[in-house]
Length: 210
Image (cartoon, rainbow, N blue to C red; front, top):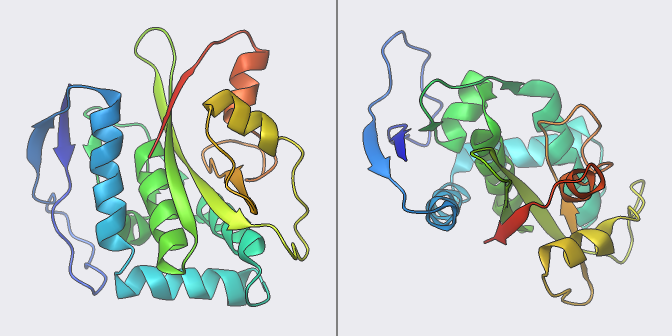
């Protein structure tokens, strides 16, 4: 598989331009290698000041979450991306940086994923990149937040958390829960489990998480 990667970004917001970003072609031998590369991107951009500033703005000003209510913070970030970033299909798979996605306000599922995960990580919420692979060539990647339960504030724990973990075959480190944050779906983020939905319609997705 051949991909094009968006160029590097400075701390400041890049100015809109008609010129295409610099790209380099990459070949990934597997979906696991692709997810590992995207994880490296998240680890790089979680310290970006523009990303952190936006995350803080989302959870406190836009969503009105209280401090230390990490579940509210995680759901708020997913819902903000769902509301403000437009999904667009790509002719050639292109991995743009979280800063470019935030600036241009569009991307596909992997761009949504790295933006959400970077926003989460920038304010201390651990995330996983979870890849679903069906028969054929369809692939989908979405982030999950790992947040302590405790006081949940206005967001109640969804009842599909344990089903998601069972489907992924991942351990549940107490006291934590894994919440799917797929902002490309029509349903509000945090109310639908993509893995469970796929299983209910008869699919048997293979899942990977980093």
